[in-house]
Amino acid sequence: RSGPKRRGGGESVKLDPAVADFQKGKEAASATAVCGLKLLRSTGKAAWIAGTTFLVIVVPLIIEMDREQQMNELELQQASLLGAPSSMMPPP
Image 1 (cartoon, rainbow, N blue to C red):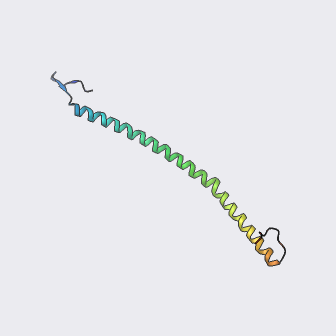
Image 2: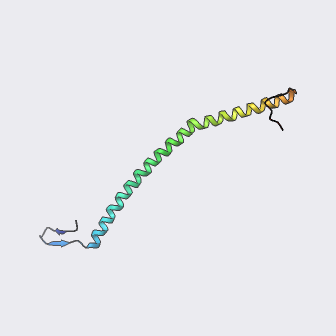
Image 3: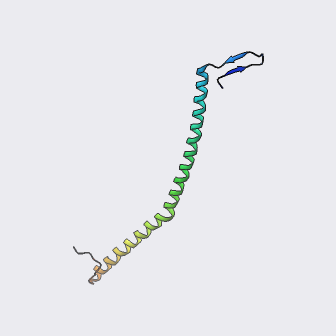
């Protein structure tokens, strides 16, 4: 690209080296931007998959574990109110 250029009149014009360097830098920046957008897009997809998996699998598990804990505490409270010896109560 930095070689002689021909215009309609047949005259030869050379590109200034600074212009050629600028053009190469512009092309490199454009390629970098395209790669950056592709990376951002794939990272966004991965984040969406991870977030959805967390919501579908982990959140219900956390809710179920919380329910189980509440049921255990309720059983311990009922056993202590009734005065029955409970083997589930931890030693003081």
